[in-house]
Length: 405
Image: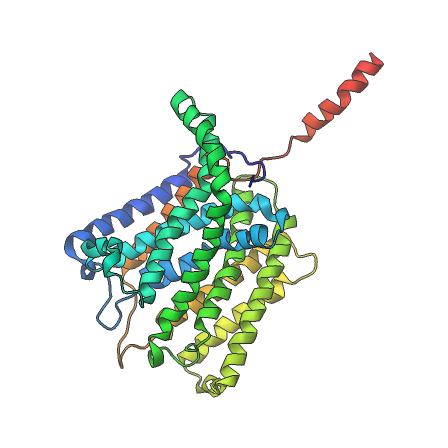
């Protein structure tokens, strides 16, 4: 299953902004060294009431949804046969692979007794009724699947390498990898479907500890819908930013319809969300005018605004960017609310992330951006640029020149 032609962006890597990203990564690495030496309590505000903080609510639960662009675009291209979106596939899968890698790393960081992680490989001791086990296995497998899906891009880059051994390896394995891709892609669609819905199922176990405005049997479905919508929103945002940052033509003709699909999914989310509250008789909770009413209202406004922006006829490129951002903010707030804002583990229990937790999250995001820039500059991820107009004119003028000569 061949991808559309792609080419490395090229250019200088160590720009001032790239060095800032590396500096943030260095700060996070220093904090993490302290965390692994002196324990998780030394750098976090976590407690027995709140064993999960932003490293799970943002880095894993929200981060994997933002990184679902590869999953969402794969559904369009490979399951629904919308081949016109093929140029977006590689960059979307790269975002997914990086996002899920960061999520897996965050899980390790968040484990109090990380040295027991080897238990995940002890198949004989698995609790097959555990939702957490399913989430852990699916995220771990999807990290590998994401990088395998990207392998053709690295092998294509290897074919142009100076090292003859690397060139031979790439030429030998590229055809084999392309033949295996349909099976890998099928697995790449299955795994996020499973664990994204399971993240919603996980909070079903919390029962009444999650506020009734968010606690519903529809949590698995709502988590699945938001991850796909956020995936499309993430692709719109990533493509818009990379076009501007690398001075490339905009992929507007693909992004505008993608935005409308995301808006449709967000509309479905709104209908299910409000309809569920009405059927369960919980709409009266909105009259409490407390902090839960506030955050629910903000979530609804963000969702409505994203739909209004993305469904504009002949939408401007700037509004397309804003619409993608609104989709991500609406989905982020919904997921953040279920795991932190609406989660009330005990009376009087309060959690606010420490500076250490925030800086680690900032460093992980910086690492993801730095890795993205490095890979697209060195390997064929983004669609190749069309020939320059001057070259076309030169080619067109050649026969005329011969004829008149």
